[in-house]
Image 1: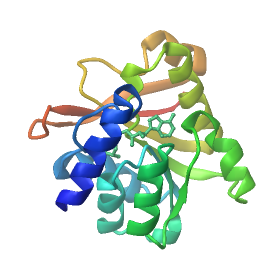
Image 2: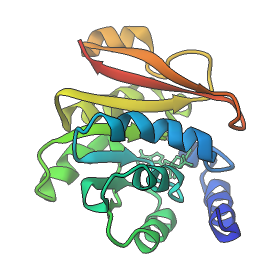
Image 3: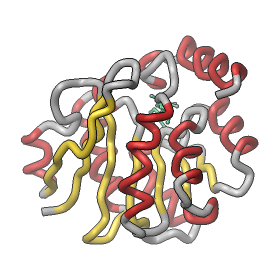
Length: 190
Ligand SMILES: C[S@@+](CC[C@H](N)C(=O)[O-])C[C@H]1O[C@@H](n2cnc3c(N)ncnc32)[C@H](O)[C@@H]1O
């Protein structure tokens, strides 16, 4: 990753530590682990939530997703501009992930196949977390699934929330060589 994107990420974190959620972007291995199930399943298009400086975006494209098949959401204006310039062929929306389904409809996109989220869910209030997860599922058909990484030991979507929403989750990969080590969770409808 070029120094300028690391510096930009850090600057945005300084402005909004809870909103950005991490001092450094995800490492290459974690980004690859996040991208792999979404690219492999052939469900299209793919929606990425919390693009940051584009480490996961880059992994999705590197694994074979066409730029036209990817939509990235980033709420931070500085990061949104950076992503738009870095990936000119990818649609990058400056919107809140909790309202992404409406933003997609406005773009003429009525369904996505998978959602890949790097959002800092654990630092969000439970109600916000629930709104975001519910809206992610609103964007997808029955066989769609949500990928979310966490640095915590448990599911970032609490079990009771899963039950209430009619979804289930399981860890699909652990990335020990990320700093800090991370787990990728996959959620789908029951
Ligand atoms: C931990 S960073 C991850 C960035 C990058 N994808 C990575 O893995 O390094 C989380 C990103 O989500 C964005 N974000 C946080 N809350 C958001 C929200 N409600 N809607 C859209 N983006 C949000 C932040 O601005 C930040 O860029």
